[in-house]
Length: 139
Image (cartoon, rainbow, N blue to C red; front, side, top):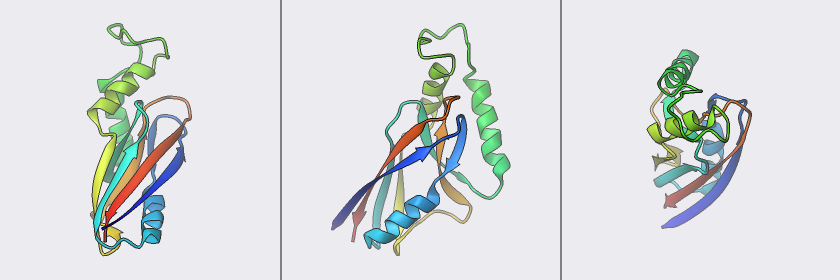
């Protein structure tokens, strides 16, 4: 059994989805691991990870719009407001999605479906630098 670890930094443009599937694929190819399990983890509380369709950009646009409706800014019921009107909604969105993903590795590749990609889902309005930790175990 072998292991490999890596970090990826993603610069976001503010709210929305950033596809970083290719960066993970490239790193995974260099590990030489053919079969195992890949863990992808975002080291932040106001951004999250999703596996989602990567063919039609309207999918991620609709998801962004939906999350804006269910966790709006400036809700008078929020207690946590010191970090700006987009911070508490960002925490809610992160709690409703995932901070880590597990992806099987088969034949040296992620076993994603035909139309699946790995996305960082940025929940804050301003651009950020987000760190993604990768860990693969296998043979």
